[in-house]
Image 1 (cartoon, rainbow, N blue to C red):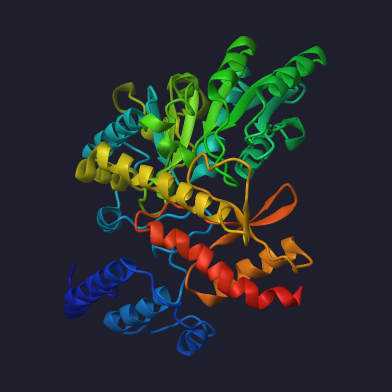
Image 2 (image 1 turned 90 degrees about the horizontal axis):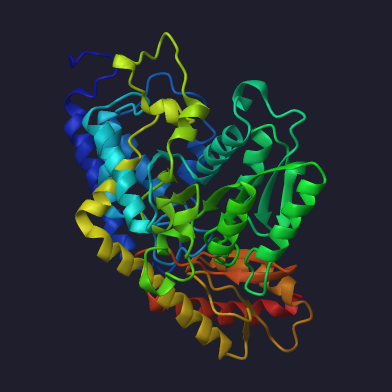
Length: 472
């Protein structure tokens, strides 16, 4: 490219790249330790966000400085005391992978030669890591697309040709637990099945899908003329980390011809551990599983994956023959088994993590979070100012409530306390509604978090909770 091209950085290219690297290096070292508070909102940025579209632009290095300020005053999930929701943690080799992915910008809709072979291997490696016999799969933008893809394949298998004819008059049903992720409902709606076809199955004492209730629902629907299509088990619920009884669900799915999908966006990262082997028993019997590697496998967003035991239903669901997408020698393109068309190399960051760390070190990192969640649970249970759920964490989420004797409204107090902790800035967590009660919900998926970060939840909740309780 000539230096006089209108989009060339010219002599400032190296300086802009150097400045970007400086920003990343500074952030990495800062993320090693929690900081005492978040940076205040920037007045200069506030003024910039009010401006209209630039016509002439500014120097690239100056722009990098603005971006550095923007990022520093955003909520960074990579910080060790970001314990809200289920956030990524910015694994450093994943960041490097994303830099290279953006630079080379390979399109995974068609065969990308080495890039496609890498993604095929990443699918195999991920299956081995989880203990799932993957015959195929693909990397997607997130759990929503992964779950949608799985249910689209389930629809086509149960109702061949429905990708063309639809499901009008077929009366399909889909079964989920009462705490399944909303992405499943949205997928059912988008597929034209309609959320009225969803059967919500009651929970057992450990907040898992009740298999007996599932079996009863399926039999009742069959008797009423419905066609049970799929059951979606959850491998680690977003609310509490509960893992549905996969083997029992697989038995029911096999008996009635249901597609069994395991939404393991969060918790499936723990499936390969010896200590959770019994909890995830039956995973290998599922028709499909989904996992967000940008959650508990630590890589940056977006890196979700859908794995299937048999790749043929995916091909029957998505393959096509268009003039602008040739099939050389009759071979399928990657897009013939995926929903998305223009797809970046999302798999590189996970592939690189497997290559650099190996399965053992990644398993060790996940297991540490199981330990941290248990430590927090035991500490909170032993403290008279806190209450916890009646059962220990199954994975790495530890819901708890701050309770003072004279507080008139514990739920309102914990909601206010959550927002007070977020505003304080020393750590960041989110609230959760469990059986209509409000809990603080620390979740440990950040490889930088340790025991001290977990116990800091109790310290800060005591400090701020005692000061705000009179407002209730």
